[in-house]
Length: 267
Figure 1: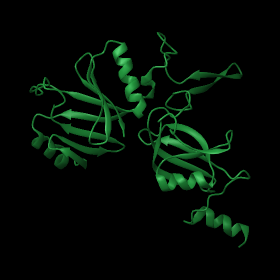
Figure 2: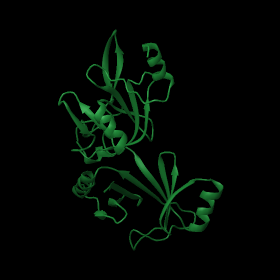
Figure 3: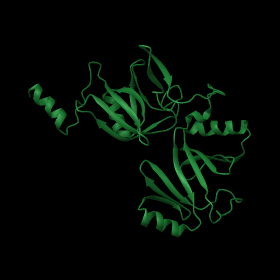
């Protein structure tokens, strides 16, 4: 087959034909499924690409170590591949991932945390967000938090709330863990209708009031690290790290206004 025909087939056809470079690699860009942020750029060889497709977990090839590695195999900061795309020449791959914790080895959410600025004809780097001036190098365990994973609305009338969100707002039902916990998929996020039940002292939400729960997804080890940090800072734990029967390790606490916060990991 003439080279021009092969190239046309690679660009216009539907056959999966990765075009590896002289080192047997293709470039892979990983972005956050929730907000589209670029998380990292790495390389894949044929084997890591195969494992990624078959397992749904991101595998890469390290040029410095000359070996395969699964993202998060030591840190717990895994990448679940939601979608994979190939570019026009099939020599670059784009994966949209559900990132647990930090994508960068510096414990930042993204490897692209600095902005290049023009500086009097030269170039300089600036951080893309405000630096914690009180403790810029705190190394907090909460650096593993990169996004709000799901939002919980505490419902007074569950039946009426379900009718509203399902029939009027037409949200896509995801699953029901119990009569008091119903989940809906909203883009890359989850909205939950729930009845307060974590502690015996949680009173029903009063008429005219609102209650909110925020959940942050991290690695398994980070759940315990966050618990330790909260205790050190004098924050009372409503529930210490606990393995739940539905496959989560959870940690519950409250903010100063009494809102319920959860740090969790899939186990």
